[in-house]
Length: 151
View 1 (cartoon, rainbow, N blue to C red):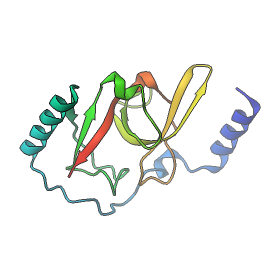
View 2: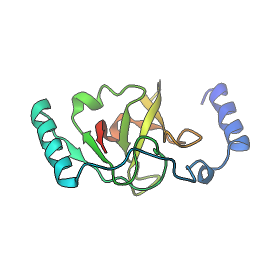
View 3: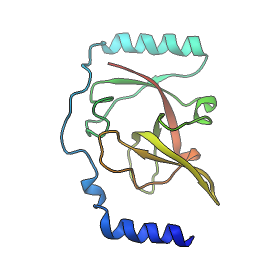
View 4: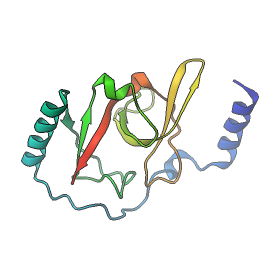
């Protein structure tokens, strides 16, 4: 670990709030969920056919972390197609999972892309969370990338 990285780790440990306080504690308004589930499935099928890729609709947990854009009841259209996952950019919404940290999946926005000795990694943040996620996300951890959201 470089000196600059070590200092950042120490400062983060001493002065940043613990992860429990990083999650959004309250709801903020999000667009209404107006598209019926059956219609959302049809839109996903049409999108998959048009793009020639697999498209799924995910269920969103009510964590408030993406409030304002994505909320419980919304239907995010996602793909696991390598063409999209291999071209993740800042601002994209990704779904990732690291079994070392949790049992569920996280859907957050990419806020930084960097690299180290192990290769490219991504930093993410729920758009309604105050701080970035503490995890380093490797490309191999990304399961889906967002194509759009049906409200």
